[in-house]
Structure formats: C-alpha cells, structure tokens
Length: 404
Image (cartoon, rainbow, N blue to C red; front, side):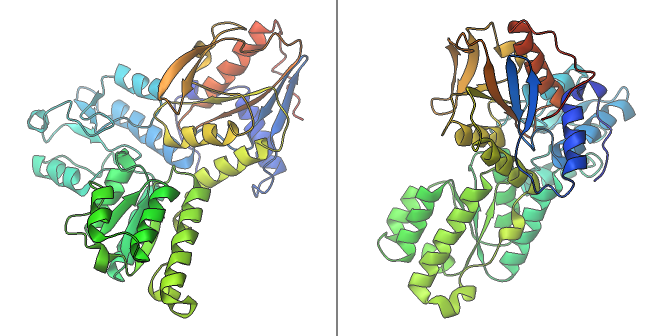
C-alpha cells in the first residue's frame, strides 16, 4: 500500500511499533485478536485495526501539499477535512479557511471566492452542485480534490446501477457530508432514497409489501428522497449502497432484509430483476476496524476507551459496538482525562459531553481496551497511553516494548 507523506507529529513511537509488528505477523489481515501491551499493573488491549485509513492519510497529504505549494495564496477547505478537531485546528493554523460547516451552512460567501484561490475538497467529497459552483467561479476543482477513493467507488457503482434502471437506496445519515455528496451524484443517474437504519428499511419493506401507502411513505421519508420520487415505480428495482463510515454489518443486514422482502413479493426465481448485489461497495477500512472491534468483544477488560472526534460517524459506531459489553469512554484526546477519578466522555445517545467519576475505579491493576476512529492520529492514542501510565505512576520503557 502507498506510503503517505504526512506531518511527523501525526505519527507515534508506541502505536507505530504495534502496527509494524502486526503487519509482519499478519500481512493478510486475517487475525482480528487485539495486541496486548503490558506495563506492570496496567494492561492495554489494542485493536488489530484502528486509526488513519488510506482515504484519511491521502487527504491529509494533499492538504499539506496545498499549503506548502501555494505560499501567499488564499486556501480554503469546503468543510472539515475529516471529523477530527485536532487535524482541522492544525490545518486552520496554517491559514486555511472553511467555506461551510459540517451541515452545509455557508461560512464564507461564494462571491468572496476568486478563481486564483485554492479550494480543497475534503475526504467526504462534495456535491455536483458545489463542483459546478466552483467551476463557474474558475477554481480548479481537480488540483486538490481529496475525495476518498472508496467514496468514489460508491459513486461509480451507483452510476452503473442507475444505468441499469435501479433506484439507489443509500444507507447513511442524510445530513452527513459524505451522504449529501453521494446523494447528489446518485441522483444525477437514478431515483435515490436515504435510509438510516433497519427500522427505516422496514418502512420501505412495508410499502413494497402493501402495508404502507404512498402518502405515508413520502411523509415518513420527507427530505430523504430525490425530486419526483415515486415509490410505486421506483421501488420495483433497487440497489443498496452506503455511507462508507456506517456499520458494514448493518448495511449487509439492511440489504438482506430488503432482498427477503423482494423474494416475498416477487419470488426467488426473479430476484435479480429486483435487487442488485452491492457487497463490493463496502469500505475495506471500515470493515477491518469494525471486525477488529468485534475481536475486542471476545476479551475481558475493566473498561474501554475510544478516541476520536465526536462527530465522526465511524468512531461512533465503534463506541456502539464496545458499549454492548464494556463501560466505554468516548474521548477527544488525553486532555479528556483529568485524573484517576475524572474523565470527560461523550454520550453518543444524548449527544453531549459528560464529566464522569470513578474512571480507573481505584483498581490496583487495570485492563483497558483501546481503539480509535479512522480520523484519529496515532500520536493522540500514544498520548492517551502515556497519560494513563502517568496517572498510575508507571515509568514505561517504550524503547523495548514487548507485544503480547
């Protein structure tokens, strides 16, 4: 795989050793058991896969090249590069300005953008409408386009499905940057509907099987389907693709559920005329990170820590998986850990930070599961390890790190 040139401060002395060793031990990525790091009375179980993925490293490399290659020029990002506050803050420290927020609200008027300005398209990609707007201004939209190749793969698959008269069902969050971009590209080729989860897939199924009316369907999915969408015609032949940071297992569950619905409605013998096989659109990194998290669920531990941006979809899904078994803390960085007793953690259900007590539970020995989202630098995970060892009054020998 390509070696990216990203700022050295994103890399780490601890996690880099872990990842290098696992790559040598398991080059085909078949072993999803975690790595054990022992530091006396503190043990860390490190997920097999976590942290920066191909698409994120590619985006960061391009963004910093844009900065260093264009001294004196104004440089803009369409919106957050990735969902990690540390990365975005560092880019802003170089003078990069965001044109929109993560919800698509305008921060900088289009009229203030000039043709000789540099505009970076983030890893999530962008809509055809924004591409057209930038092109009309005269901005070169290809020079610093960091759209993840796996997002583009979803777009290409959607285009093929549309050409074969499929309606595209996107498993994603309708207000997420990536899903808005995918919706725009898909909508140019085919009728398109966004569904968030299995519950919404069941509403689609209810219409297909005749227990939900067209009016009820449109009311339920208001704002989530393309203009002119007609469920009576557009749900005869479908294909499911996803926002690449959603749970891959949930996308597969939704697809299989809708496939079973089509079999019930039309019979097994004609199923290929009603739903496409779209397993090839699932992102490898999302799959690997989620499989590694399932591997963590096979272990015993006192608690779990997930590090990443609170608005990161893929990181949130790791929290969802781990909290099924462990007391799970979702933190931004080592700065979230005040002391042995107190930690600031994000509640993904109530969408707010909480100041929690009894963090390390006054234990003499503690076993901690540790992972991070695809937009979290390894150096931040390092800092979390160092902070916990500091609180537990352990002086580690990182030079002679032994992996279990």
